[in-house]
Image (cartoon, rainbow, N blue to C red; front, side, top):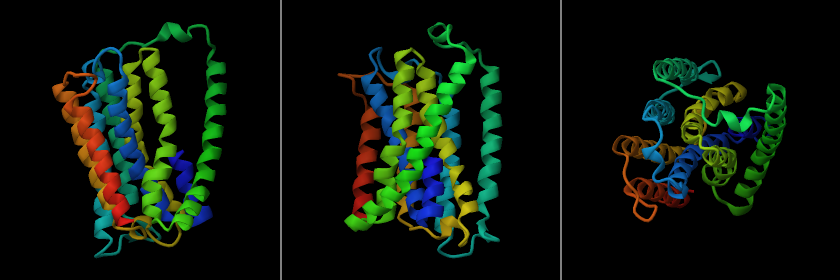
Length: 278
């Protein structure tokens, strides 16, 4: 949804702030969702049962967020263009491909197992592909429509496109991730639930170069509000909290611990200051 909402915001609406706000905002929602998944987990803290390898993906996603944030900041002082695209576009794409290779090699070195294999033992591969394709089509259609709705909300309320993208659109486009992760937890695939969120944060940053290719008025990150730097900072801080939580694996007291409280607090604080700046 983030991909097609972004393309729609660029081509149909001409609102780069909507797509960039959506991407950073979706990352904050994904990290908030990790806190919520930890709270609703019935078998103790989620962080105590998942693989520590998720820290690698989290660190790499943080690097891509940092590259995007630095690009927005530098755009105040100098041109970012290589033609109509930004210099960050090839950098983010190459970093993403390099990071995926690192993650793949890291997973290969670890012993692996098929989680919940028996739950779908009777389902054919063709049926799986059919369900996946149908679901993807609905998500694509909704993503295209969301950008136009977000533009109307921004116009009707007077709130900035940055705020609408980082809160309203981000909440909606992150719903598939939380749904998939909850379903994964129900079948006991805890690592899949966490990897879905963190992997989405990594992938979301690669949507910026795709948007950049469609935005023909110059580098897309040079055309957006500097207020996105606040959301990017919140994403990086929340990612560091997740990494720390995976390292220390805190116990819960009444389903709460410092890890999920910190993520919730950072998210609410970021949303508040984003509204103030809107």
